[in-house]
Amino acid sequence: MKKSLIVLIMCLCVVSVKAQIKESINIKLNCAPIDYNPKILSSPNPKSIHPDWKGSEVGLSWSFFSTKKIKNKDGLFLFGNLISPRGGVIAKGCYIIYSEWECSK
Image: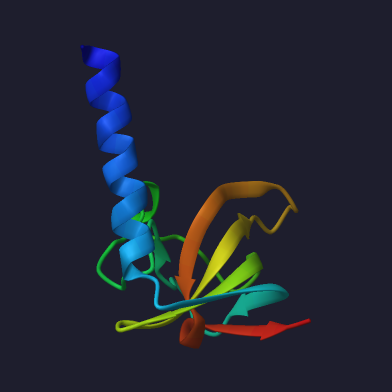
């Protein structure tokens, strides 16, 4: 029963994120924050701050490697991995607000 409930909750979360996506394009971009403390998100919604990044400590030396560009009613977002200044992946599969980062191919 407990496993079934967990699976159901996970499926609902995936459906909820997919419903928020209007357009998704596969891309490869390397990004750097424009200013200190850009939002790290758990879904493509500016209000869905990732639980591990509520008090964001992301500085200008951090990077974000994007694999998808997502456009929806809330704006333009990127999906990918957050990279620390030392080069390690710190957060896999998170979202950022495109306008808070400077990106290049």
